[in-house]
Image 1: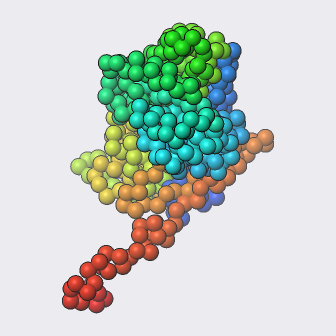
Image 2: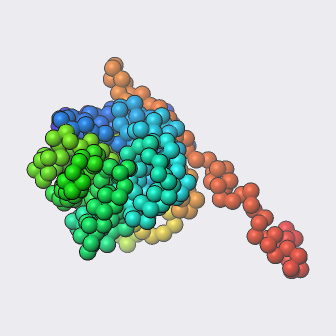
Image 3: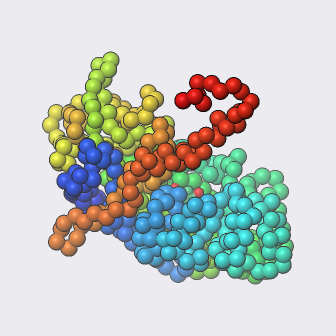
Length: 457
Ligand SMILES: *Cc1c(COP(=O)(O)O)cnc(C)c1O
């Protein structure tokens, strides 16, 4: 995308933050909120479609784990995307969002018998992870044909990117069949030889931190293997290649880079035959479609100083920025400061830590950052948080999930907001924490002991 789109995004984000403050969606009564730029999401889908235009049929799916919110999934379904799901919750969210089974891809290293039966019966594309799972599907099919495409996930073992936890193609990764292990390629070829219904290969090399050449090398290994299998079987058994997701996102500036076109150029270089139309291509992008369209807005509750360091205490911490808090060097976020009316602040810079509400010392979303002076009542915004942040809540300290709103700029230039998810109420937090079983543990020893202070209450 061009710098024009970066400019539009910044302008719309500032207008949306101001509007959220004005409407009371962000402020003393609602100190934490997630915001999603709908125009930005749709522009990312367009950029993805354009980059892959060509001879090959391509099914782009959205990796639901990047933002498992039904209205967001509905938006993407409406934009023509499919959906990659990897848990029963994601599967039901995708179906509720309106994805038909033929637009779903089911990945997961731990699929249960029940989940596999459902997918096989409904024609959902499935990527199997290992040889035991292949045998399980043999038993479930018992000679029948599956209703949808079935693939085998392979791990090309091309190595790690900058973030170990995000690198799925290391030598010892838990995902897929490790292709460089002794005998693995022969075992895969044998598996395809014995199963006429096995017709796809799947490789998702890694997510944030994996450079494009590494991803392309992994995809290219899967392509080479498909060619080899089809050659050996004497017909085009493998008809689809699922090349995964993992385009890294630029968290340093407003720009979209690398672009989907950069990625396709890299793939064309590494595996030119991939695009000639013989294979249906499936993609599974998550972060790159949504990250830059999301913003977390938080009220600044207090400011203080400790040991000479300024600290702004906000309501956004590990519960919504889990990776950033626990791995600050791998997941830095850009931060913006706005006044109590939601206008961008400027003026002299101060070095400040941005802290969250969680009760552990490391709960910082930014450390020693130069920002305009912050006061209580200001708003701090965490940028590029549209994927894996407010949608991937961590319930530390029993903090509630924040409300999420989507926004668009209408034809007259005004910002329109729509609720995507209500804030979790404190009542819900208590109910979800075993409220209806409140007496269960005390009842375990009832009768074994003399009544004590607890039962006497
Ligand atoms: C997480 C995941 C994706 C999406 O990764 P992004 O980095 O968000 O694009 C795609 N495929 C699989 C199998 C995944 O686990």
